[in-house]
Structures are given as C-alpha cells and as structure tokens.
Length: 300
Image (cartoon, rainbow, N blue to C red; front, side, top):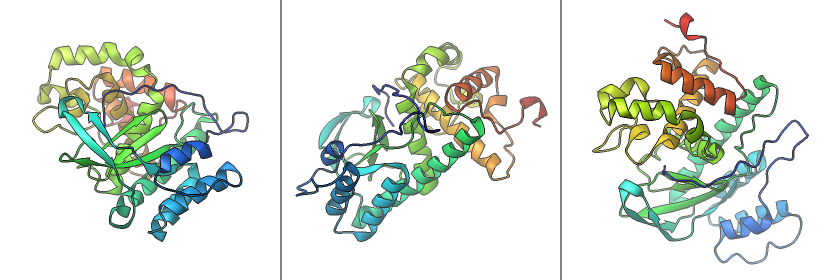
C-alpha cells in the first residue's frame, strides 16, 4: 500500500452500452516481459494467452491460474520492472521482478482467488444497483515483484496496474490478500474524489486526535496499526486517500458479512457522525447506493 497514485477514471462498463475495459496485446507484451519469442499471430486475445503460457511454461498450474483469471475478468499476469521505490516513511526500497510460479505460485493463487471473490461481490452489487457502478475492477495489469531487504510495500496501484509483493509481510492468506487488492483497486478509482469529499471530516479528526490510538479508534475503518506508529488510515503522510481506501475495504467486509447471513455487530457507519457521512458519500459515489446493512437506529 502506498500513498500516491496518479490515475484517471476512464468510465464504467456493463449493461451493453459501454465497452468493457481490456488490455491490448502490446500492453501485455511489455507486462509479461522476459525473452518471449513469437506470440504475434492472431487477435489480441490469442496473443495474450500465448504470452502468459510461454512466460509461465515452467509451471503448468500457474499457467492454468493465469488463463482462468484472464478468461474470467480480463486480468493479465506479468512482472514489475526492476526499480527503486520511494516508500515514504518506509524509505527507499529496491524492487525486482518475480514471476508468481513454482515456489511463489501461492501468491498467484491468493491473487486469483481474491480477484475472483471481488468480481463476484461487485457484480452482485451492480445487479442490486440496477445500473453500472462507474467503478472499474476488471482488466487490470497484475505486476508481481519481490522487495529486497524489506517486506514492504505489500502492494501498490497506478494506472490500472496493481503491483503485488511476493515478499510482503501482509500477503499470507486469501482473506488478507482480498482486502489488500480491494484497497488498491479503490485507489485506481478514487481520482482525487476522497480529497474533495472526505478531507473536511478527516482533517477535523486528525486535529482532534493527532496520532492517538485511543482517540482514533472510533473513527478508523480498519484496525491495521503501523509498527511504531498509529493506525494506517491516520499515519502521518498517508492522508485521506488511504483512509478512503480503508473505508472502501470496510464497506466490502461488512457487506460480505450480510451476504453470508451474519450480523455486523458494530457497523462502521454507526460509530460516529463523521463515519456516517463518509460512508454515505462512498456508497453513493462508487457502489450505486447499495447498502445491505440496516439503518443505524435499528442496529443494537
């Protein structure tokens, strides 16, 4: 998870009128990288499948996972180029490409399972909304990498690309990776909405609480605490964008609880007036007004 993203929402899709987003063969060729020969014949779909088959050929199970993910939601599996990453309070971090296969295949399994769950959840939400959500979650470039000497960032997102660290501290189970990727996909859709709509309440909370964990607890969407710091949502330098992404993650978690027939005992929106305002704005803007939770006055 990182602090800065420069992205532009390019529109919604589904319900026939607007074409679904897609990745071209030219984009996939850069994404897959490596010394892949051929894979230049046929339509983009055929070339992309060929590229992933060739690049992951040493691990047939990884090939199967990548192709299933592509067929289901248009995601393309590749690698992040080697680079030095400015990690803010984490410092400078060296990142190298890492294919998610063989000993690292579990990370492709986590990512594929997470993205499949996210697709099912948002498809159901869109159906309930009765109209396109104006929220992109398909046809993402998935760039896998390994951090050297540090185990952060777990993932980061920019320009419809989600980069995933096979050495990330957080990346150890399907539920955690699902939350991580939902958080990052929200960043891709934010387009500075959070700054415009949530800053007033967010800044007031920071002014009131600073980094005090006890004070912030009622306002925090996610309980993740940075080692030696405070809640991730309110970590100095992260700002309202990270709060908004954690708010979106809390939305997904609570809605999934309702969908599973379980009761959400302490809904975030009922914790404080600031929470309720942020929740209402988020649900209206990104999730078609769909809130499966009852109103606060009926929740004990």
